[in-house]
Image (tube, rainbow, N blue to C red; front, side, top):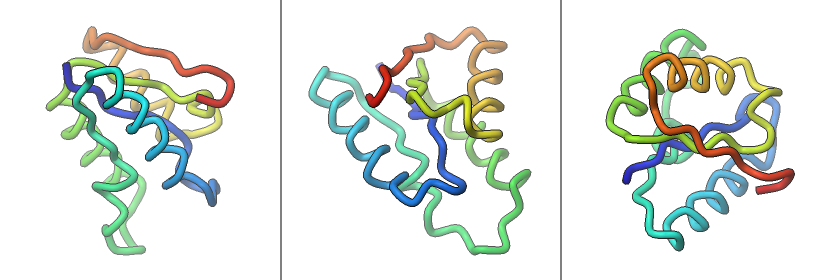
Length: 99
């Protein structure tokens, strides 16, 4: 099963490490992962939130499930990704307090 990782990026200086830790945990549990923090980090700084989300939704479409990190509720993009996954009947996996 391929899992897209949801979590807070904007305003989170540790997001790369947090996403990497979740990715490592999911791989250890036998999942294939899509880590948007790594995939989309090379986008130009002037990329709009709307453009970023469009790419995120395209990545979600390649997956069977999403994994929502503990901080997803503090992220507008994370909430949009979570809602998209829920509305499209993806398997939703919830992280713990600190993943």
